[in-house]
Amino acid sequence: MAQNFSLKDQLFNAEKVSYLAGLFADADPVFNADSFEAKVMSRLPELELKERMAWIADCLQEAVPGDLPTVAPVMLRALPPPLDPGKSDGDFGDFIFAPLGDWVCAIGLDHPELALDVLEELTQRFSMEWAIRPFLNHHAEQVMERMQDWCAHPSYHVRRLVSEGTRPRLPWGQAVSLELSDPLPLLERLHGDQTRYVTRSVSNHLNDITKKDPDLVLERLHAWRKAGLQDGDELKWMTAHALRGLVKSGHPGAMKALGFDPDAEIAVEVQLNGPARIGEALEFEARLNGMVDQPVLVDYIVHFQRPGGKTSPKVHKMKQAALTEGALTLSKRHKLKGNATTFKLVPGQHRLEIQVNGRVRAGVDFELLA
Image 1: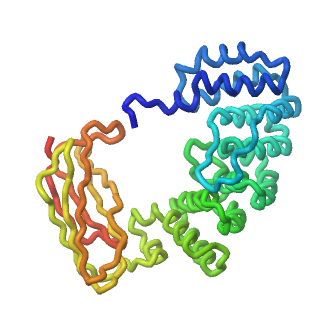
Image 2 (image 1 turned 180 degrees about the vertical axis):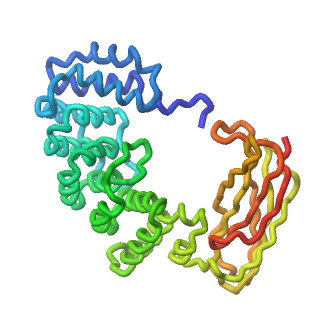
Image 3 (image 1 turned 60 degrees about the vertical axis):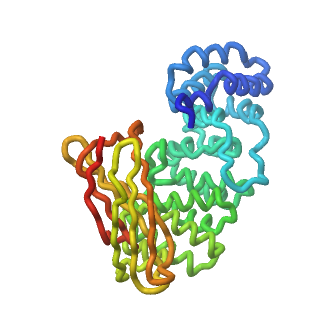
């Protein structure tokens, strides 16, 4: 990614605002596109991404005043055709339509049925997982009832909204008051979906639940395997994706669900290849020995030194394989970026550990040099 790349400028800029203004001008003869664009751009450059969404929503509300019953016909006429139904994954939509969800939240909480109709249409242009959450908090019964219908919707974007909108830990999303088990009947219907965009959301939802109740997720995945409603390979992928947080922490139940024995007798030796220096790389080799054809899931953990003397362990994937000859040798080169903005490296004592099937099997201390 280019050093000066700006996601907020890519998603919300003068060209995108002009496009949105043109859609509303075509839908409403009294909509003043020039005035709307000038108003939005007067503040847009100074705002962060989420703030830009809220600001555009405010400007739309000023440009097209009224409650949701008044505004909804204009909003729906302004929409472009739905996203390509021929695709099956990764078509998130155009971010410029995200402010319409904020707008619906601002004027639609007193009109939940109409708001759900509008969000059903909007999410086929841009995902409305953030916008649905205030309605879950104010009208949970109505929303959950509508979501039962959405589980069978012909658009995979609407089906995905059911799972994504009810996630316990949705990034950027408002917290919802649902119990962890409340959306499970919906996930039960969605887990057999034939679209990866939906099954990925179901898996992410389950991964959220594992943060508080791992056993609930493991029981559900076991039931789904017995039910046989999803393709076997797809369910294996869903299981691995749903349990990825538990795998990093070495949860025994997650390991067993994925076919890895946490109690397998596996000997590991780890060797560093040269010094570790900030701006260069930590190079090492791990040698595994155990029963022939033993499945292994190998991670490595770097315990980074932090200011003040504390350490911060970071788990990284290394290899999923089998000990076909009763042995396996793995090499790794872990970059030690000196200019990372999210995690600053500190010279000093560090530790590297090798985790196999959720168990730490070997480790070595090393000095990180400046």
